[in-house]
Image 1: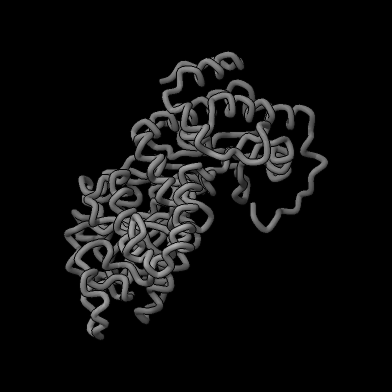
Image 2: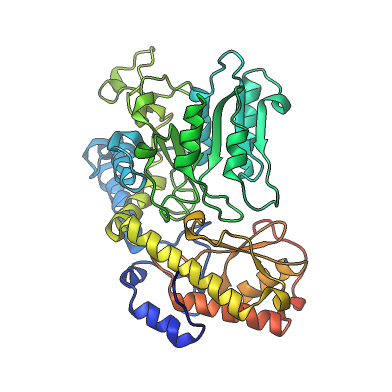
Amino acid sequence: MNHFEPDENFALRLDKEDPLAGFRDRFHIPDDDDTIYMDGNSLGLLSKDSEESLARVMKEWKNQAIKGWLEAKPAWFHLAETLGAMAAQLVGAEANEVVCTGTTTVNLHALVSTFYRLKGSRTKILADELNFPSDIYALKGQIKLKGLPVEDQLVLVPSQDGRILDEEKIVELMTDDITIALLPSVLYRSGQLLDIPFLTRKAHERGILIGFDCSHSVGAVPHKFDEWEVDFAFWCSYKYMNGGPGSTAFLYVNKKHFHQEPLLAGWFGYVKEKQFDMVLDFQHAHSAGGWQISSPAVLSTAAVEGALKILLEAGIERIREKSIRLTEYLIFLKDHLLPADKYGLIIGTPREPERRGGHVALEGDENIWRIHQALKAKGVVPDFRPPNTIRIAPIALYNTYHDVWQTVLRLKDIIDNKEYEKFSEDRAAIT
């Protein structure tokens, strides 16, 4: 348990002692020095390293044109595998088990279409009711492609409080009719971090394949996919990985499944050295690269290279250590300066560090959307998830403890002075 104090000098002292403090200077903080960016769990900031890697690729395109596919450094033809090998270090995988490709939901479809196999009475998919809706849409689509009724074949783990999932309840629903399970590593609303090794072990004991959507954990939380024997995983690169808006995603396939044929086949999943033979029979690469579908979006991928260099330089273990301390400090300040009985705000995120991802969920009453708007007007950039949650994500690479202290103080001013009353109750299209 960290010992914290609520005064500003303590926050400044923590920043002086922070071994990762120097990484902040390698990011572009938006607008001005008074802006406190707390939305890196939705879109990470642009690093100078990413800016340089993107500029380099633009220059390669300009000067080399089509030669860039083999002569750029790294060569565009191998870029997906090159970045996959770098990202593998963040998730405890071998280099050929990770590839940078596609988008999150496309990768979900590519993986689930391969691993969702009907085996006698095993026909159902296990997911959860708190998952990001896009994942559920995709799973329903996969069931319909099998010609099966969604209402019978998709089993959703319920939540007792609409906030967290009980891992024991998940295991209870791993019944004999489940063939595959897909769960989030971190719940996007509450920030709960699921026990991936426990769930994987229990799934395998019951003959169930299991995969994870790690969009809200990779870049903030260390993973050990190989050690845990996870079957597959996928994640975006624009949140904690800071790859840029809509940047290329990643997927992981455990090497024990390399023999499986990817059913959403495309030519970039072909055996690499034979790809330009242009034969009509598909021979998939026996690596995660076999689950690629189309040519890499080189410009959308370029910034990911610089982002990965920073993550690897800082070290995922050190990033996690600071992330835990930042969120713990935020929870401490909220408890001391914004007590629930007076301010109506509660912490919707598990307080145990090992059960928490990289953000803190603040839940409130009917005024919470207007409080969110007031925070933005006051220079703090969080985000909002309906029905009643402000998500605050202090990012280890570029946020400071003083950022956290100022965020809570500004929030206190907003509520004390009822500044939120001048804002509309209508929500914007993007929250």
